[in-house]
Length: 207
Image 1 (cartoon, rainbow, N blue to C red):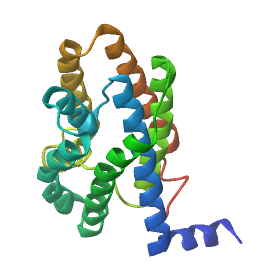
Image 2 (cartoon, rainbow, N blue to C red; image 1 turned 90 degrees about the vertical axis):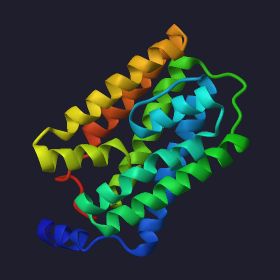
Image 3 (cartoon, rainbow, N blue to C red; image 1 turned 30 degrees about the horizontal axis):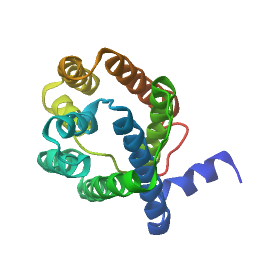
């Protein structure tokens, strides 16, 4: 099969079964990442990081907080990315909310070195997010807001996300112990590195 034929075949998109597998894989990996993160008492960036931090402060479960904090962003997702993306994202957020709680009862660590856990969190979560992106979904939140503001004002989406994460980690600095804050930064860097290296449209064109 020629390169052109391959691209044409991919461009037709995923089947419903492939999408279901992608969403299940992506949310399961991210759920496992959350289990590692919360076991170590760390935080991360974006909406998931906000939900983790709020769960530490309030005592509420991550899944509930994560589901609630994403609710205001769906209309932005619909306006910017369309109905298909918004529905998939809603499903992914709901699945992660449930799976993070379920996996927390099934996966128990007797010992996990913080810096190793932070790196594993970054790799596992990065892989999960890549799967979601490649199946036309996300985990909602600040990424959607960034794209919306970029379209409306010209302010780059990356700067919106960076500004939010800077504020989030500034708050986390006063909430987390010093070492936990450092390992949290490491985990967030690894996640973004995995996505930056691997999330390229010229490598993967199916939607």
